[in-house]
Image (cartoon, rainbow, N blue to C red):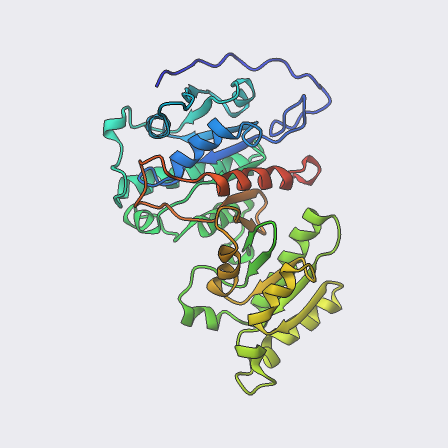
Length: 373
């Protein structure tokens, strides 16, 4: 795939607007996209988004390996499909100068050099895990420095991260550690939560990547109360008003008055009462088998779920093509598609970019110059 040089950025059209993370002419945010594990479908869905959804990728660029992105562009090429040239850029702001249906890539570190040197599709490898993690770390630090307004992350592979010696099981924990280090805080002083959202339902999780036994132990007054605070603050910014938040119980029928467990009585209900006393529009705990339907019909803006699968299964059942993962509580905007690396179809050109496109659009909606700093 040919590489197109990018001319230097033009002088700003609006001298009054000085935030480098936003286009001076349009006010649109500058967004770094990380391609994820190069052995998975991440680079392909990124390439598809830049080729087929030019409105969604305006002001976006890829922080990663140029050879991996050229290989991805080749995977989606074919009869009747427009070519996707890869344009190397020297700095994030150069993305504004790249024409539509062209893939701007900011090369990081020691690039692979050739497609033949890349990790094979569909195979777990330490090298692939390291490449993916390095992209995320660079993008997170750029966002924390204010050089980009947001990052959108394509899927990582947790086994590959572990093989690479990355001390975090996924994006959320890695980004939490980067944010804590940037702010001079401990990880414990930088609480974050995962929200999964689509057009019909939003869920926020009390715990994320823990075993189910560990997740049960994480249902404490402090963790539930912190989740409610983070969800309230983040959704207030998104909605422009106080969100209506429902809280799912942990046990069947939300404990049935203590018959099926006392967590609702002793832990969850007190956290809900505390949130209400602080002025939050919070309700529950409700039976987990019905609360998501109530939120989907518009009674609530979001549901706080007690553990990973309780909250993610309802959203994913509605369709992973529209689901978006948002990390709440960070001093930066981060979204990602609601699916994994799909090693079984990597390199075939069959990947669907719909969830990534939704993640790009949501990141743009979440970015507001006035909220930065």
